View 1 (spheres, rainbow over the protein chains, first blue to last red):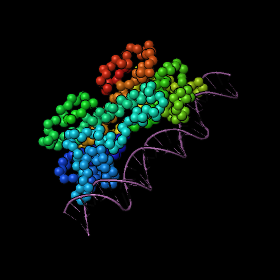
View 2: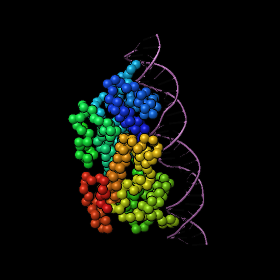
View 3: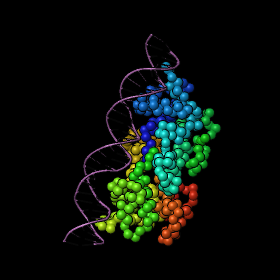
View 4: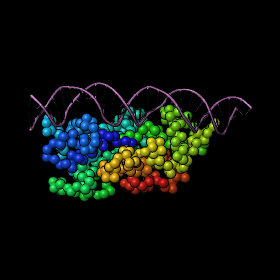
Length: 161
Length: 161
DNA sequence: TATATTCCTACAATAATGGTAGGATTTAAA
DNA sequence: TTTAAATCCTACCATTATTGTAGGAATATA
């Protein structure tokens, strides 16, 4: 059971982007140094997030990255899935043909439930939630849906929105 | 995100042990061949399960393994944790000293919640549940608490037991 | 034109996974 | 008492995944 540095770095970088809330693109150099992540490694991570449409990249001098959506509209499962790839704890969950007994495999059902549950937890957190946890006041344009307005126990639904 | 072959093999081996419900110890040779797991590898896995008290090993000729408790009293989280070790998706969850910012780290809280949730799902399944899913009738001595008698949505409580 | 940035691809060190090999030990059965 | 079948123990190893590094190419601003 592991979420690799990719998933963690991506989450932290996105959170920093959200907290900066800059109208100008934020260069990775800034984020890499404040998060103590290798710039080159972070470049690769952010490129894939850009490919997935979670951030907008601006090339050239005074370029950098911007969130593609408001922080309340970006959830952790999107970030983690993008950089980690398949989140199934067992590959047969994603590709049933890997094992001849997939159709009747009891434990496979459990591994699938584990994956669904993990993604449910991650989907329940938006960047806005994380900002709130960091003690930041919510921005005006994301105040419509309060981060903590969702039912606390329903982890399969998105908090916030 | 991965549950390695150790966790999967251990689960399948324990399920087979439960389904055989043999009063005599079941030798690993039997399980290894029916589950198509390398005998030597399975030996190591079962040794650690025995060390954790989940099975009883009987050495010598006509030896083998027995469940240490009724199938309804053994849950998947015990099995998986024993063979996989630390289930935290990020090591700082278990050892906060690995990162100076653990005390104030927002994402760390999420990784911890992910771990708790996964273990909750696994704890909600006993070997008896898996047997029931395999279509086996419940054994008399575990019929008192029906495997599916627990509230369906409460994944943090044990089903059965 | 110089500079700061993202983008792309290849390489590499390290760690984790998934075993194998070879016995030593134990114990029931022949 | 011997033999055989089983667990137990430890070391090794091949493969894969992780976690980067390196070097530049492309892009766009100042």
